[in-house]
Every structure is written in C-alpha cells, then in structure tokens.
Image 1 (cartoon, each protein chain N blue to C red):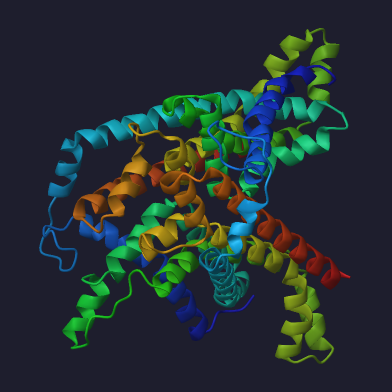
Image 2: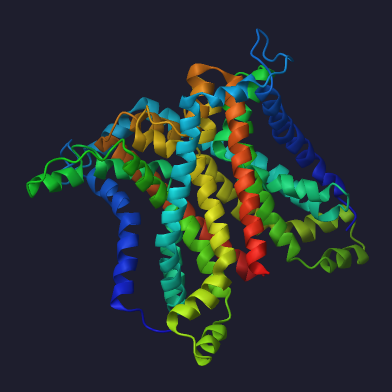
Length: 260
Length: 273
C-alpha cells in the first residue's frame, strides 16, 4: 500500500537477523580450521572429512534414508486409499474419522512418542526399525491424506462418471482417470512426509531401541555434549538436504498447478 | 462415485490400532498402579495425587508460565512484523513470507543448536564481550536461553496466521475508518486489530501448544536438570521407568491444552459477535 518507513525496515531486519544469524554461524564455522568455535582462522574441509569417515554416522544416515523411504511408501498407500475412501463414504462415522485424521498433528509429539512406546512394549514388539516405521506412519499418513483430500475436493466428479458412461469398468475409470489426477498430490504429500520422517527426533527417541539410531537421534545425542565443528558440518549437510527437498517439493507443486 | 468405499478399510484399521487403542491405553495406565505385569487393573488416583508434591507442581506451573510468556512475547514481536509485511507490495510480501517460513523447514535441533554456538560460556557473544572488556555473562542453561530458543523457534507460527487474516481483510474498511474521522490509533484498535483476531487466536493457540509441550529445546538450552512438563514425561518413561505416573502427566498436559484451546475458541466467538 505504501512504502515502509525506515523504522519498519530496521525492525524487519532485526527479526530476520535473529532468525537467520545463528544458522549462518553454524554454516560458517563448519568450514573453519580451528577447533574452537570462536575465531575464524581459515578455510578447511577437515570436519567434513572426519564426518564422512565416521562409521556410526554412515550407519545412521542409511537408517534414516531407509526409514524415510519406507514410512513414506507405506503412508502413501494407506493415506491415498484413505483419502479416496473418505471422499466416498457417507457414514455417520465420517466426521469422527476426519477428526482422527488430523489428530496426530494436534497431539504434542512427546505424548505420541510415549503412547507408542507403551503400546509397542505391551505388544512385546522388539524396538527397532519396525517400531520406528510404524511410529513414523503416525505423522506421515496425515500429511499425505490431507494433500490428497484437498486435491480430491477440487476435482470434477463428472470426469470419472463420464469414463464410466463411455463404457470403462469402475476399476479402469479409477486407474485411468482419478489416480493420474491425484498423483501430483500424492507426490507432494509423500515428499513432505519424507522430510518430516528425516527430521523427526522426539517420537523416534522413544521407539528407536538401544542399538538403532537415525541421523537426527545421532545429532541429538551429540549436541547434548556441546558445540563441536563436526556437528556444525553435520548440521550444514542436513540443512543442504532440507533445501534440496524444498526445491523438489516446490517443483512438484508447480507441476501440479500446471496440470490444473 | 459409490465405488471404492472399501479403500478406507486399511486406513480405518490403522487409525484404530495405532492411534485410538494406544491413546486409551495411556488413560488406563494413568489410573492404575504399577504391578509385576505390564498393566494391573487396580485403579487409583495416586498418580494424580503425586502432583500435589511441590516438585511436580512447580514443574507444571513453570511450564505454564514459560508457555504463556513465550506466547505473549511472540505476539508482541510478531504482530507488528505481520502488519509491516501485510502493508508491503504483493511481490515483496511473497518474499518476506517465504523468509518467515523457511526456518520452519530447518530442523528444530539445528536451530536450537545454532543458539548454543552463540550463547555458551566460551561462545561467540561472550568472546565479543571479552574484547570490549566485559566479563563473561552466563547465558546458557538459564531461563533466558530457553525462552530465546522457544521464541525464535515458534515465532513463524505466530506471524503466518496473523498475516493471513490481515491479508484477507478488506482494505477499504481502513480507508472508511479514516474517512469517518478515526485517528490512526482508533483505526488500528477498532478495525485492524478486531478483524485480525481470528489469526491472532490461531497464532496464540499454535505457539502455546508448541511451547508448553516442548522438550528438546529446554533440554538442550536449559541443560539436563532443566524440567518442563515435556522433560518430566520423558524422564518418567526413559530414566525413572514409572509409566503410570508418566501417563498421568501426559493426561494433565492434554487437559491443559484442550482447556486452553476451548477457552481461546470461546473468546474468539464472543469477540466475533
């Protein structure tokens, strides 16, 4: 509406500085030669080399990637089917089901974590990859379900009916018409779920078991001991990964808009 | 369109087994005593009575207080920011909102850790202070560092809903207020603030929910001894092993959250009328 005053600009600057400066410091010091995170002494990649040589770290990364991909795949199937089913039922329970579908995003993570821990313990499930996988679907499915549901709402139901009128079986109509139309939403929801799974600490801590650790858990246990250049390097890599995922996500979103 | 109703079955089963049953389980834990078996069916109020002990009561009060304070500061700092952003040109708004959202994507651990670099006793700020001859200030592991972490982490959750409702507002109403002779303060208080209330309520609810249930931030910036509700739950489950008490705490946390949410909703409705 009108140009912002100098005071407003300064205010914006200060708040953004508070948000970004700490992260910038982490990145800068990950390339610093000195071990002390105080003075810049020179450019060096040694902390990255140390990090890549660390066996535990590699294992944690592989675990995180497997877990992310698996929970994302399982959630995509259940979540998409759930969204389609939810759009087609008119039971009395529909409202309750819709409420349940966003429940995991409303309950604090810490409660979800402990609830799952107690549950798995009761079932005598050994804590490990399986419990992590089930646990991660708890927050992955709602993301995918919501994205697909939003897409289905915007979709013209007559398209599928037209296909049926033209003689396609209901199965064919679903696979040829509906599924391709909701695919972009499935893809963007899955990416979001993948990112969330790769980032999760709180729920994972409760259900990972003694031996298995994912990348965020590894970072968490190391951070507790204090600031080191290796963690700075690790955080920088994770940040780069997040940025990459975000770029892919926005690309998918763009594609999705074009299809509309 | 009546086909494929059955597609919901896997989701339905998943929701019942993984969400609903475990949640009931916790309620059961909270009201029973510990036994040799995983769960006994001897009911008790003892787990809740334990809260009346001063240590636990203090933890709850402190979490509540820190949550309120964080929410309040986020509102005071975030509202003007949302207002400034809403007054920029369309293009600039997109850019600024993106700048606000990006930190939400960065791992919370990373953002919290980033502050440790700056705040620790031999960290960057203290080194800069030493250069100009000021003694080291102890900032890590205090209420200050925890609050700072909470505020910086949750600020976007306040700014975005407020900005959304400010943006949706009919701008001609502001002009109308001026035309009718209202001064800047009156226009803000009677028009802009009133119309942005839904966003404010959303922001307050989100930040308060996140702040009162946070557990990683107080653990990292407050140190191992720092106790908020989240840390208490974690310690009961992981180190102490008193699951019944742990479940009771989570139930209290859930009740606090539900109560404050319904309170906010009611306030929102009353204001809206």
